[in-house]
Length: 171
Image (cartoon, rainbow, N blue to C red; front, side, top):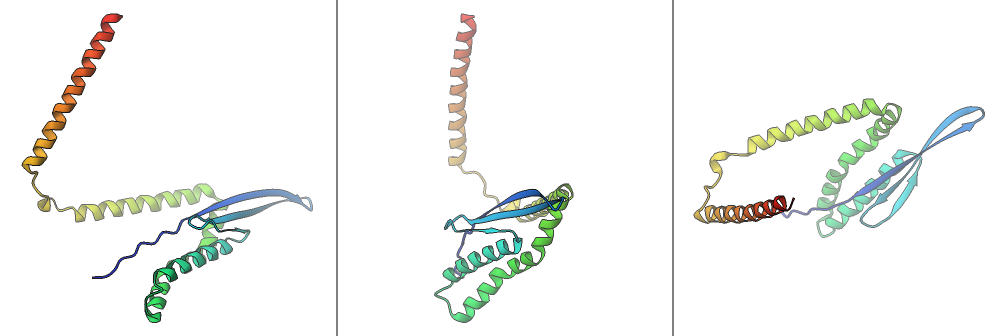
């Protein structure tokens, strides 16, 4: 049986836009701060690649800690798999960020489309995995429990009705 380890890394990224005049022309500068939630370490950046490198470093440390008792070959393999996604993000992330800052509405539309596509895919996966024939039948205990809950609810409704009737009579 394969041993499963769940690791969590959370990051908070904040951006600050500075608009200023320089040599009679308007200029814009985006600056940011990225924080690793678990240990509180943070780094400021003006180049988003620096933020991505910070995330990659933290994730690498987390993975290295999780596999420190494995063979060096296995460590290298796991670390490479763990960080492959971040190599891609580091490559395309700055362009996506730049496009988002240029035209937020357009990028939000793309993001909403992607989210909807994921929801649709997720819905299809759920419908494929739910096999009604495999559901267990309710036991006598389940029915008794539901009946007791219904009786308790009916009793509470009766109490509320009496209170409402009492309040109506006072008017």
